[in-house]
Length: 269
Image (tube, rainbow, N blue to C red):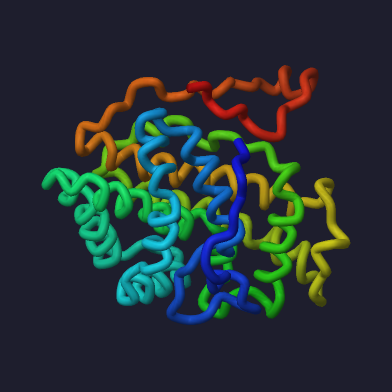
């Protein structure tokens, strides 16, 4: 599931030495277009085309997240719990997109809907969710993101939880909390591999490293989360959910006997 990964905008704060206080920006901007394009291949084709046509505007809108909501999420990420206040604020943000579509300002609404990828990406990022109140040791975030980018072509994109694509909008809050819990659990692996007492250069690690497993899982989790967040909203406005690509189920036996493609093929027109 790989399209052209064209960089958009400045690097997000995730590339800082440590996740800065008061910021909840997930993944570096060089990876956001790739995550977005992979998520577009999971959703129904009609929705995928509508969002792809507006991808530049969506990426720009995602960068302009409300500062007050950004700060509220930062506190929740440090504690590991999505507060009721933050959940209400996120729901209000999502509702703005749906209201625009209901008012027939469809293009504006689709841009805002697409920009909610920022929410899904935030809760799926083990750097943001797993560092705790003090963040990771200096340099870990930089090396982790550099490792993901360097090994992106080797990461097989899978649906971490196919059932998430059927979630109703009212369950998004609990789903986002589950994403944060799962992402947070990867922190010991990332910290242990990249800072076993000193900072490790990501170029000294390869796909056999446990950090590759963490990177692969977190990337696929983010793709699934973005698609699930979009789908919940799309169903809310009674969007077309037909012609949704069906992923191939790979069993442990299949995985042991058949090579797994690096990317799911792009759906045919």
